[in-house]
Image (tube, rainbow, N blue to C red; front, side):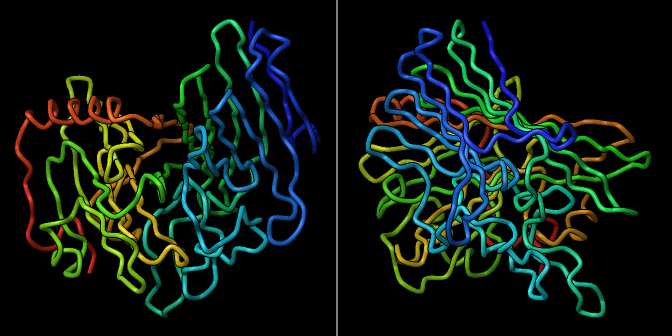
Length: 385
């Protein structure tokens, strides 16, 4: 039997600051769920919901667009060591500061959504004023409704939320998301619905910024995917094409590199991408549908640990270029009045060489669908100047 609790509903004026559930009441002794409001520093006022299922745990931040903050499998913390010590309340994130880079002041999550109106690099108008900030606004908008559901019979726990990104005279977009895990399985599924609440047509974008550091990222770590086309974002990335999917140990001051790609998929348009450490003892696998998420960006930031040694696995509706560039190339979700779009992905945590090898074999099978086209330099239709 499924049970659902509403922890937040701004329409009904409902809010629960502290809540807990013990799974033993439904025969799930290893399950514990806690919701509470953090206090102190820049996290003051941030709501956090944590799920513990045996040695696997994960946590969601309703205050930050329902982002996935961290996960844990046994003694392995899944995420990264950001110099931003979050989670940071949106009050302290100057998204619209003139540089367009204020988004970075709150960036420390395992999963940070980028969107909905835009999701790429900052863009400025002809007078030099900020038109679209870095990675959009959705990650810095608190949810207006949050529920938790537990199904003891089927062994599932879900956290759902609604986030509204709207502006008078402009777009009126809504994100409804559900994050789900199954009993005893270190996997999280994210199912998102983007709705156009306006009586006028709209355009939306989404990029899932999945960020991974030590121990899955280390010197000798590898990214593997059934790549159809690979394009370096700029000349700096092009200079390292021979090692685009390999990672060095942390190097202070090293410049980030980004590669854009599309993937081969199976007959149902499903594909996967894998990051594994040097000895295949830890890995993360991303599964998604190329119909709704046709593009993929790989962000490599192998700087010093203290400065944020991390890589981003980023399936999206487009590439994270300026909004007008992506719009000119029709890389967005067109939404008629009242129309919805479904998208999402599944994250698998892998802690054995056997599991990682099985994902490598899946990728090899999909790669047989065709060769990889590698562009030696940035492509004019994929990469903004």
